[in-house]
Image (cartoon, rainbow, N blue to C red):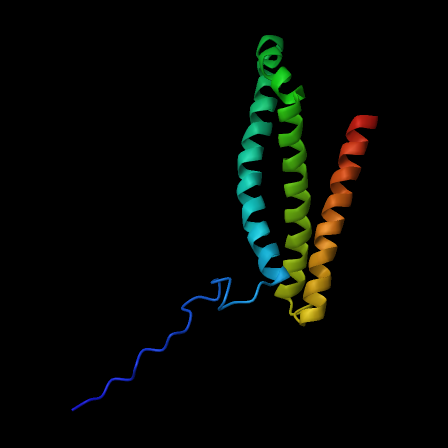
Amino acid sequence: MTTKKPAQSRPLSPFMLGQYYRFQWTSLLSFGHRITGVGLALGTALVALWLIALAAGPATYEAVAPHIKAWYGQILLFAWTWALMYHLCNGIRHLFWDVGMGFDLKTAERSGYAVVVVSIVLTAAAWAVAYLA
């Protein structure tokens, strides 16, 4: 006769935020990295559409340009630029992790804040250069 152990009531996944899993800054950054990756794919399609319209000639470009220059087009391009900078900075952070650097909690948290700040600064710099040029 075999006896079964009672089922343990513990979470099956570390991603169960709430009572089982304490929120962590690095978790948010990881989610952000995935989301910006998807956003970059969609935004790159928009940029490609703009470049195709540019190459297709003045008539096609005149149909697309008002949408790129409109407030919603500018917001999409700004968000795409930030996603690009964030994904770049966080990717560099991951490269350091790949060689075994920066795993201690304090360094991981600080590098996460650095990723956010540097991505914002790079986005602002890119848009400043674009508007000044």
